[in-house]
Length: 306
Image (cartoon, rainbow, N blue to C red):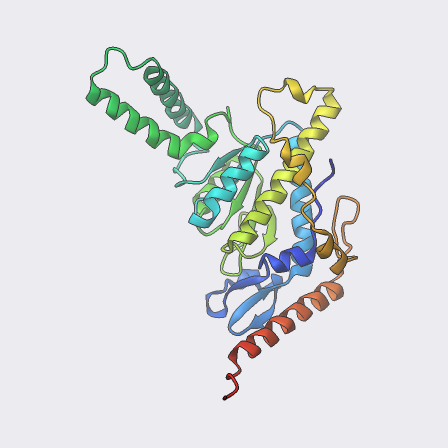
């Protein structure tokens, strides 16, 4: 398996280029903004493409070296994609509320995870010796711990890289990672500050399709890293206790043939970094924006009178 490829057309179709309203922008994102349309900032995808590629390379290299990746996305539209992507590549996630000290106070978090395991063992043993009320309280405590810590229960230590959706919402997580020297890969929208992010992915952090695309690409990069690690150390993937989803190998090629043909020369893969020049990126983006504007004008035209 190779590092996942993607096209600018895919980013456009997922709405990655749509930022926030111009009055909500963060000036630190100025260099990543292409322009604005109807009061909405448009992100420069000719920069997003190579930066996303660099982020995927970093993810793959960390995992190939035996590292762990923590997916973080607690906003509603990110919760499911984050959990599914992390599960598919046998990594870890936080998709509920970020608990302060999750990284900087890992020992206490580990104790809570151990407490969850003890409760589960007691409940599996039919909670002999406990009253119904005690069993109910234990079940509630277990469910609460599972909701908060279920995605990191098997992490076994601090992650080696953190992937974040929405840096504004996950600012505490990013600060903890920076304090501990954990590299951060993050999607940064036009209303956010890239401060504290080591590998910036300029893009829409609200659209469900965009979030799913980011998560799937990162998951595929993780799987590529796992494959490289297994080959380097001569491991038998079939003997690993925790495996990435087998279907991920078949899903790694996320481009459909039509999209690939339409954006020939814009694909960016492990051996094709820099295939998109600023001029090419601006041309594709401008064409797409013009097409969207024409569609919007058609929708606003009055219906012919009968």
